[in-house]
Length: 291
Image 1: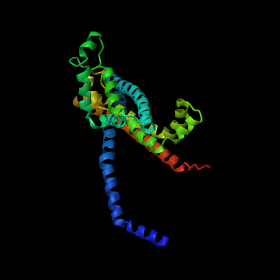
Image 2: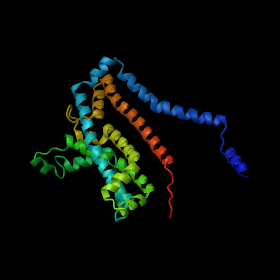
Image 3: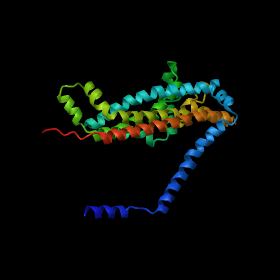
Image 4: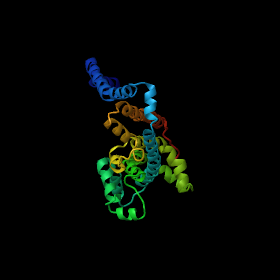
């Protein structure tokens, strides 16, 4: 009976070779046209005048300044979002409290709000004519059209990534292990470090990778708050826009290739983390002990 059932299910879900070939062709065509072809064109245009011009374009003072500012914004935004993501995920997955669903909704706001609108909100709050504009001006503090505004905008658009990766993972793992550690006398920090963190490490790294990629590639919100001050408030995406608008196409694609390389590295790291997470999940034995 089991053999017949297995055969019937297999026959019902078996596609003809023509359908398989068609699906494979459509998938590869979509992948080639919308992913590989743009990447290929970026590197082709970047190296259009040779390696010497390529490295010269990247070594330009304004471009190097944009690279350093991008790295600075990511270096500040990612750790802060890491701390927030862990804290929010821990609270949502491990505790029941009033306002829990509101917190989850607030975490999703950057996903639903346009980055341009987010930038305009920061201008409204911290701009010269904004709510705190006069106070900031009196104390000689500049946020909009300065580095702090870029960092704030980057934090805003990237803060859901870590939390959104950890919340479902922590909820799926439940609270039993943490409760057992507490009963055995472990402190809150010991419980997190020795029980929770090992269970979420690959999901945490996954969220950090996505957060970092978005931080370095963000354009809309950063464009609004930066003021496009060359050599001071331009990040890599803004520098690409300026070079392209000046018809310096080879230099623009040379700088854009840095973001393309970042995308490829992110994809490779993301794939590796997904593989490790799946491997550990499948290899985890079901622990059964005497009652």
